Image 1 (tube, rainbow, N blue to C red):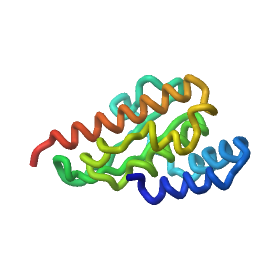
Image 2 (cartoon, rainbow, N blue to C red):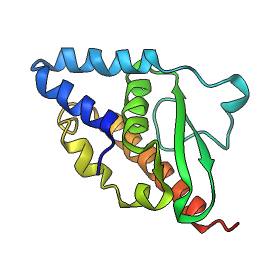
Image 3 (tube, helix red, strand yellow):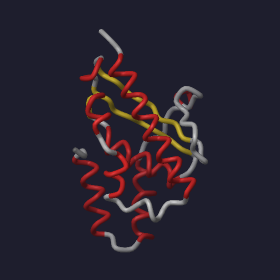
Image 4 (cartoon, helix red, strand yellow):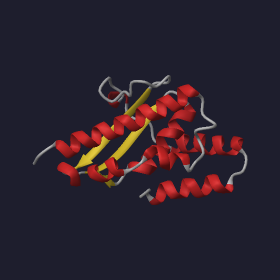
Length: 144
């Protein structure tokens, strides 16, 4: 159920044999992301449970399970910005219901990140996924 943009990341990772090249690719994805405005980096958009500072900003169109979700994000760490870009590729453009159907752990396993991220980075990635899911639940539960 992964988005086409996420599938491109999977394909690129399959092409890149060396983990240094994969890390560079993740960092480049983070560098390519526009930063959040200062006013968007607030306590309400901050993701708790990450060693680095992380902010996720949802843009939600519509209400209920059909609400379409897109995300923007930022971090003070370049590798984490790249991980945010990866999650944005995975989730943006999906409805709230579809976001909740995504098995993020399984999709991320396709990138083989689990063996190459520190425990702190892995925990932070899980915290970001949990935040995305919580935002999808809130959007799904909203009414017109």
